Image (cartoon, rainbow, N blue to C red; front, side, top):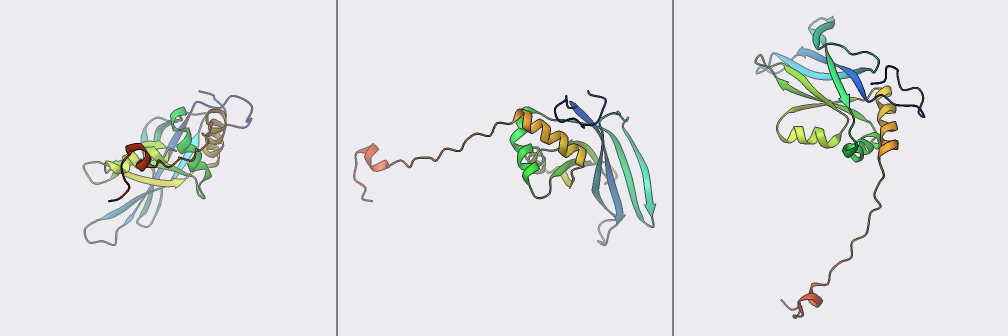
Length: 172
């Protein structure tokens, strides 16, 4: 891994990023839930590897922000099209996948910049939060896509005339 931030777009890019997730716990208005949890941000630091830990970083009244650190994000060439579509969207997102622990608290276990991976996790009933992509992750992902993604030209499909192939009549 490169030990410096992405400043030079012509130089080598980091191969992965050390990330932390900020989760917010607030009182629920529902009688069936005590707290409402949501991911509110992702912090990126390509030059430091944080150990896995959970710490309370801010509390105001009953609203608490917890920092879940120790995540590694790697980009993969086979996901370039998904990264490209994420970058081209009006609001590029970082996806945080979480599972509930025994106490009903969602605990992040995976981070991705891929729409496809987030969708696959949602299809198997994992909790997926979409948070704003930090600028340094945007630049890194953009550089990766520019270096690895070659869009395929879309070919217009020719319609097949099924009457000619079967040799039969077109009457129903």
